[in-house]
Image (cartoon, rainbow, N blue to C red; front, side, top):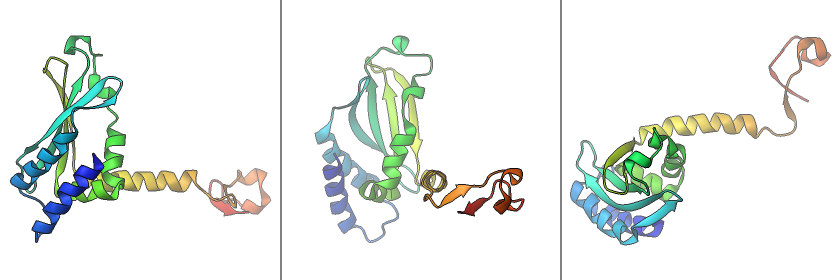
Length: 171
């Protein structure tokens, strides 16, 4: 799918002089290319059946149509909770090819049950990447500290801390 996405957008980008958005017609050309790869099973309870474009301002939305394997009545009370939106957003925000697409289009996932009844949707906009990247950079800083850094001991347990409880100190 990524290769088709990259190919379609490479062609679109060559034709554009302003890379801030693409037209709905260009988006529709992209979906024609993407739909060659669908339907595609994405996990043990859902299939992506295709894509389509929705007009919008200032840019159109690339919509993915997802289909749960069950009827709506068989789904859990909040079936949208089973959708890993963080992983979706991570892909759009961190993969260079997908990020280039995301700069030009909003991304929407619309979900239906196996009989075609609407279940819910998730809309991602490029502005969501700023929050996601900032949040994950903070987590990365916390969890990937080099061994020479540590969180200090309470002042009563560490003479070198000199009363700087909770402050990072170099060993």
